[in-house]
Amino acid sequence: MYYSRKRQMMDLPEEMTTIWSCTNKDCNGWMRNNFVFLIQPICGQCNSFMEKGEKMLPILVNTSPIQTKH
Image 1 (cartoon, rainbow, N blue to C red):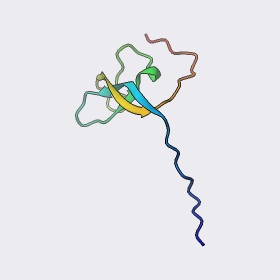
Image 2: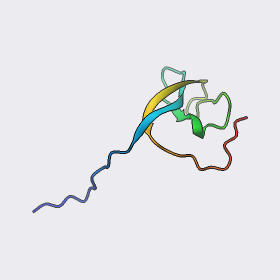
Image 3: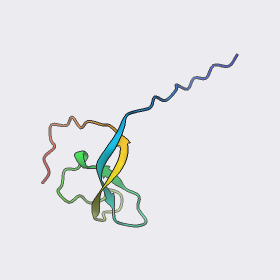
Image 4: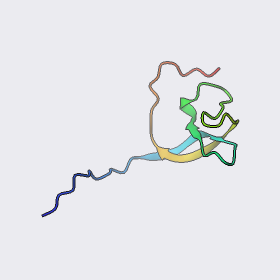
């Protein structure tokens, strides 16, 4: 009898989430809006500007006490 050590992945609840996507066509960088600390963020991978959008993502809560955007 075979027993797999891999756990079954649970389906995580998802919701439409506001994100920032990199505008550089060669970069696939993005970040959740509630993890951004600037009003107009810059891509951490290529330093290009980012634009707002939406993406279906698992629900996450940012519990950081510093969530103000400068």
